[in-house]
Length: 441
Image (cartoon, rainbow, N blue to C red; front, side, top):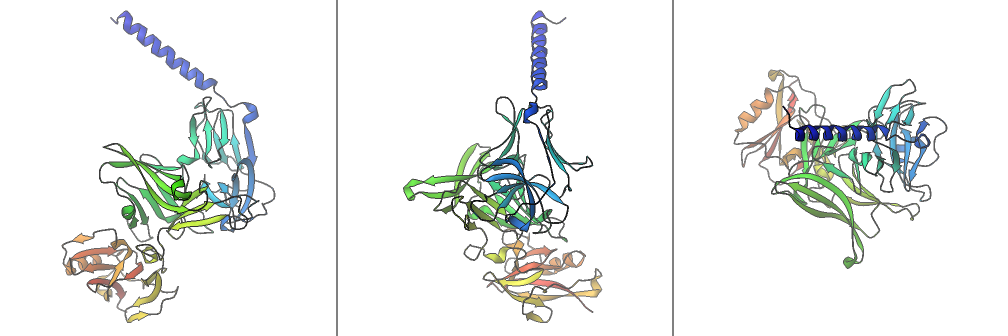
């Protein structure tokens, strides 16, 4: 038989649970704070990123505004725009709700009394929602930081757009282990779906990957090893921040603040700086796979945007040759320039039409041609297969129909299998070899 004490404790727990459920059920959005916005009417007149058409919605907090926009007919994205008319500069898209799942004309964005924010087509199909129905939400708010939030009666965030980045991090926004831990590029100016590039927060560092159409797994082409690497513990949170340094004449730094566990610690790394207040800044993983910092100064007309730093450019350690598609489908890169098109008959002048030939799967129908003093972009940050003979490396590629060629370092017997060729980099070491498949006929 249960003791009076345990019966009392159980009864108290049930009472508290009932009160909590009652409180949540009573926490509803006041009718005056609900809204429904319809995607209809004339398009806006001002220049925006990707040369898009857009319709601005009432939620606004300078310089951020919620909009419907499209880059292909009748395929709209709900997005957050950064920039103002007063600056006369291009306005840019820094957050998107439904990338790759567009809505049509007359779609609706509804915030109901149950606290759920829902994007739906005119026929009722739900394209995106916050899934916050009956979870204590009492209000919607657009913050000056560009964070769009749904909050409870105490101001706690039940949902926030900062938890769901697309290809952009705003100041104060984070990547988190166990949550949104990556940025994914846009496919192209016209095509608003996930692209082939990703920036991923991994346990030891940041890493950028390229996922080609032929590759079974994404290929690593950059890490933050030159900036920071976690020697002990694992990254759990990395936040973009703006830091003022008055001792340096009021230089404004962009920094990564990061936290680790096992052991627990926190640190930061200055990444770039500007002479203007950079609180309104963002980090963007671009369509080309490059990573850039941009700062917005709203009181400067015509040139309100400043490109503060580009991670892979001619002045960086790796240069632009490290970008997988710097030289298109296939090309040889040197000093950030596309200098040649590799062919079975030697190097020819590079053009955008340069492309490796399609190869049949049957081993008797193809061979290899050799290039000396070249590397693939994946070699810089990966070790390859160690201790392999060149014949073993070639055999592995030959047996794999998707392999387009292999790279071999004769000085340390390392092998890399390439499923997508793209940009090759000229190096001084002639022991770095490439063997590219080519049809015999």
